Length: 293
Ligand SMILES: [Zn+2]
Image 1 (cartoon, rainbow, N blue to C red):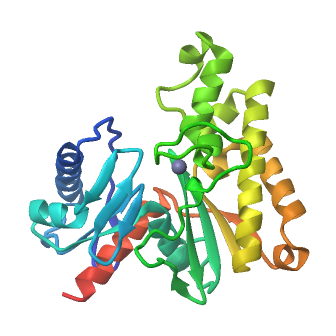
Image 2 (cartoon, rainbow, N blue to C red; image 1 turned 180 degrees about the vertical axis):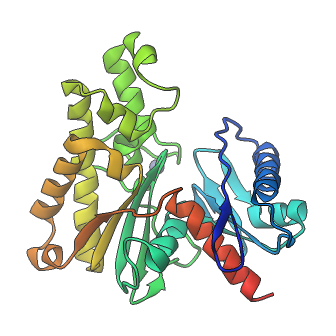
């Protein structure tokens, strides 16, 4: 997304990629930036950039500590992009970028205690407590997708087993659905299904998988609510479109398990930012960077 210095979006370009190589992904990003700048027709030069990454990022220096789904470890993404674009770049985990946008102009505008559960291939979480984003000692705070679900045993990309994202992320549920449907699956599902694609099938067995996933995410939310007592809990990424089976099971498990005093004061909302809250959050981070130049 290219925006002017007021934050007004001027052009957006998307591209899906199967690339995992750092250099191929970053080269592809630079091509997209060039295409979006051309589409924006902006006469001013690019002055800063922000990038959201599906993984753990040390936001102080823009290094991606891990992006398990890409196989990235210790990659200085902000520096590598800055070399290519010739402007300062900041890098952020996708859930934290999304939450930044939700608080600035979305579903949690001006709220001081907000949690966001975010699904986009993996599962992440971001938290604003007392008005401040929680990063943790090394920027790892929020990795709820790698917390263990009792009884779950599937291996996870992080090297452990039974993590929440092996139960409730789109790739995990797509794998389970393909096992259920066999040869039928290719005709019914896109190459990389999102939760909405699975919900759209309307098949009782698949709805059962989605309900199980919703239950486990609801249990995770109940821990989060008891621990952090947020006033707003946002469902972001693929979660809001995961269908009735998922969302009903999510709400039931969360309400049943969270302390009633904590659950009574939390409002659950879907992300309200079109074009992807994490993309918008990266633009807002770039604007902050530009303001400091
Ligand atoms: Zn894991």
